[in-house]
Image 1: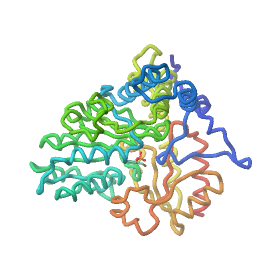
Image 2: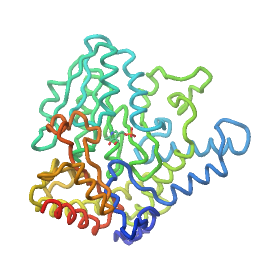
Image 3: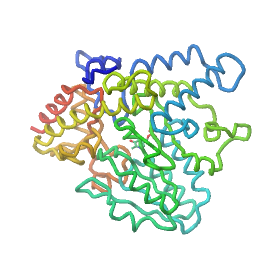
Image 4: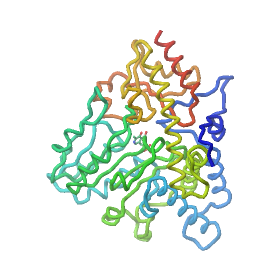
Length: 419
Ligand SMILES: Cc1ncc(COP(=O)(O)O)c(C=O)c1O
């Protein structure tokens, strides 16, 4: 049970990578939106699977029966994380591959003259698959824009964009470039009202917020385990009614049962086990810092863990924003108000006057501070902000394992570059 007090040293001790140094310099992993570090339990679980339980599934012998159990447990864990049922979860290589895969099934009955709605804020993984499908089927693409000053969607345009011919509405929960947390419930409701399939990219929200697919009301929701402290794998929630309506892209001998119906070929069982371990890490946060009891259901513990991490991340965001906004020549592309921390995740993208983002990233790399520079595949958003041909932005991503001193460290380093 918790004492409620966030103990960053205890959190960091769970992640072996955080103790590594290079030539006496500690590492600051501020690259979390690109991929997070993993707790020891994830690595151990994956090693155990590969050493003790390595087989394909569906056989009569010991290791294969173990694999069946590993799969079932992992699907149940992801369902708990997202508020779904186990038979609504599909694992894949990554979110992009899953969205390509599902787009092909969803687009099958689109007709010329139909319409789909995509956004200017999404990562291209939730844009390009649908653009390609639209081109193949002769379908019109309509765009939900965002306001480049407020960094929020133009919700006022939804009524004009979505109509009786709309077959799909795809949007993102949190932006990987701006950090904005979007009102996906509102967008999904507008799509549902006209019978469109609704798809939410939760890749950047899953590491920071509790997700409840029933509350959002979407048909599809993707996230990537390697962004929430797990191994390289993607996960798709597919709501039961859509799941059963789709004509599966499966080989004939494969079972029609879930998850095989929508899981072509042999998945990474070790990645599934590692994903479960990552979710158990979040649940551990819930027990240790979020008031959950060990006997509580996994979902309750995971939600408590996300909420406890969220309180700590808000502290980090406040610290980052108060420091960053005081650095001369730093232009932040995202919500900067310290009163609106619940409208963003701790992903901060900015430019520094007189320096290219790539130059800033490599100067920080010299100090062993890991940040990204570029457009982060937010292809439409970088064009919308007139940044595509200017090197994009520098992106600092904080996480529940980031120490407050690391926030100061990156701010000091950026301030030196600004000076
Ligand atoms: C918001 C968002 N969507 C989709 C993706 C693509 O995820 P994956 O690498 O799992 O395909 C990313 C990756 O950075 C992302 O940030």
